[in-house]
Length: 239
Ligand code: MG
Ligand code: MG
Image (cartoon, rainbow, N blue to C red; front, side):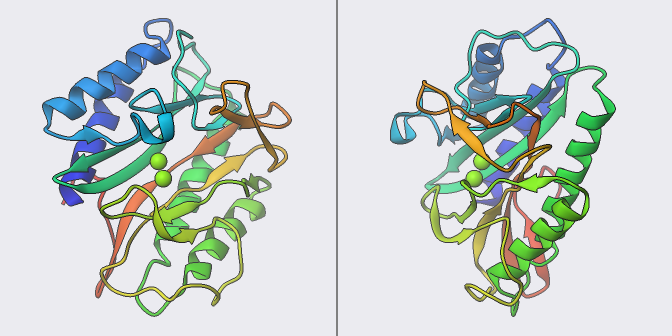
C-alpha cells in the first residue's frame, strides 16, 4: 500500500504540473495519469470499477466527485480535483487533491485551504484508542467553523486488498463514537467541502456529482495507516 501510495503521489504531482490553462482537456489529464501509473508498474483501480470508464475522476469547480473526464479544456481560474486509486501487487491506495489553474479567485483559494486543512485535522485524530467519530467530528467541526458545509452523501472508507472496505469514515459525526481505531488499520480520509449547501446531485452521465446550488466544491484525500506512533500518510512521495 505504501508503494501504491508513492505511485499515486508521483502521478498527482506530475499531472498537476501539466495543468496549464488552455493547454489540456480533462481526457488528456486522465491519459497522462494512466501512462504514469502503468510506467510505475501500478494498475489504475478506478478504471472499470462498477463500470467507471477512466483512470481518474476529475471534478471541475462545482464538481464534487466521480467526474467522468471530458474534452473540456481547463481554464485560468478553474479549480480541478484529481481523484484516483492505484493497485500495487494486489494492494490499494487512493488519494484526491484539488489544484488551482493559474490565478484563482480568493473565495476559491480559501475553500481549498480550509478543505485541505480539514483533512489534516482528521488525520491528526487517526490514532489507536480513538474512534472513527473523532476523525469525523474533527473534519466537520473545522469545516463548519470556517463557514463551509461538508458533503453527506459520500464518505471516506477502509482500504486494503479492496478499494472500498469497512469501516466507513464519514466527514461528519460525533466524537468518541463509532469503530475503535487500532494500529494497522488503513483507511481513506476524504473531506468533500462545499462553499454553499452540502447538497449534491448526480448528472445524467450517472457518475458526475456536482453541488446542488452550482457553488464551488473542493476535495482532498489521503490513504492513512494507524501505527503505534500515530497516523502515517501512505499517499506521499516522502518517507
Ligand atoms: Mg476514496
Ligand atoms: Mg479517491
